[in-house]
Amino acid sequence: MHDRDFMVPGKSVALAENGMAATSHPQATLAAVEILKAGGTAVDAAIAAVALQCVIDPHMTGIGGDCFALYAPAGGRMVSYNGSGRSPRAATLDAYLVKGWTAIPDDSVHAVTVPGAVDTWCKLNSEHGRLGLDRILAPAIEAAENGFTIPPRVAHDWQRYASRVAAHADAAAQFLPGGQSPVTGDRLSNPTLGRTLRRIAKEGRTAFYEGDVADDMVATLKALGGLHSADDFASFACEATEPISAGYRDHVLMECPPNGQGLAALIMARLLDGFDLADPALSEVDRIHLLAEATKEAYRQRDALIADPAAMTVSVEEVLSDANIKTLLSRISLDKASQAASPDMPIHRDTVYVSVVDRDGNAVSLINSLFFAFGSGIYARKAGVLMQNRGTGFSLAPGHPNAIAPAKRPFHTIIPALVCKDGRTVCSLGVMGGQYQATGHAHILSQVLDRGLDIQAASDQPRSFFTDGAISLETTIPDAVRAGLEARGHRTRWADEPLGGCQAIWIDHDRGVLWGASDHRKDGIALGY
Image (cartoon, rainbow, N blue to C red; front, top):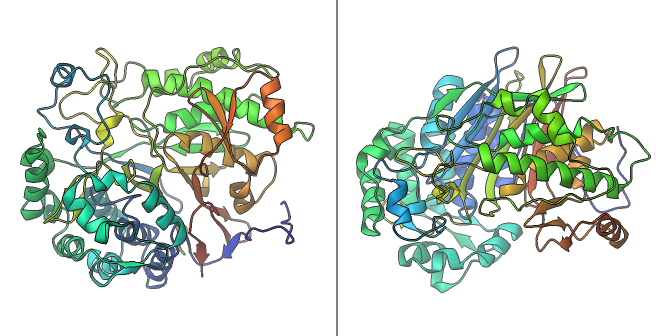
């Protein structure tokens, strides 16, 4: 295992034996650990953490968003949960084409799909929880009703994306008090959201998808020209599915099946498995180059093929077949950049990811998002719910498998992951950051399995991402590396903000130790007991 240089700024990997949580917000991690210590399962703790972040990280996530999860019971069968909402039943492709649109605007009411997070939490808790929702949602309710303090990265993002709620009077009144973004150290509350959370804690999913809360969401959307109905909300149900997987070295990367982009991460794992990235002779230029080339091939496949599974025209097995991977590998040169179109999807960076392992060895990898910062910016005032804009992920190209249609799930960027070896779960992993997430999974996996870094050191490494026609480089990457990439034909640019946010827990079965990581690019911590 790689030793950390304690003269260099950074943080040590977190270590624990009885349970651990890793989130992007210190209070969320603390809430999760307290649930674990109170006898809650990994699932109970993950829900407590993410529900709290829906209150205290409102630009990143909310109960008006979607959720995906992978759950690995100790010694049991892994299961995937698809908690992504559908378009309204009245939504047809023609309804948008007559507007002359080539894409659904990210601030439009037509970008709002039914929120899937709350039903997903309730299903996870009923199937894999030990504590009641009243105990699990207590930290979120407390923060909403009595207030919370804004940490640095949250304040930074809040100010950067304030315009997304400024255009909506009800949202601006809640999220821009006095017309200003809160700054580090400010306190804020949302008692209306607290009231809705109390109802969910008492009544479960029906408190959100039926009755007054649902009525307010539907009325708010209809007032803006939305096609949503009460039945669209009442009929939503999270689906349990089989995870999909691909080998990398002597490990197996597990992802949720489409409509998420986990398939792209698996394509990248298979492509990079075709190169010896453990070779000490490889330079950082080589590694970034190969990651960019694998990204181009995987994302081209992603944008053409991934959709609601009911609408996909090829199977996951075909995409990951030896024949297809061989064809994609043939396009990758070790010394020359290939040409590739930019991802045909809207860019966003706003999500929260939670990793938890409990004392029994159960692991959960869970991700929750509004899509863009503050989602659509549309706020159901009486319910206290900020609505997501996940429908922006639909295509408006006739004949495309991801083209919008009634009651259809859009392409999703948010992806939790698990890693297995010899039939046992060894890592719960997620990398927040919109489009970057599939590349982020491949990058972290390579840093651990090829370079021998611990999970925190792997997260600390400088990142790069091929997107929008060029490799975006974090500013911690040396000028000489950038020059080397350009010499191979890559266009490059310096990233204007950090790439992604990793949270992860590595499980050392031999010694009974959990190794936790929380990205320095966010405010969070990994903590166990």
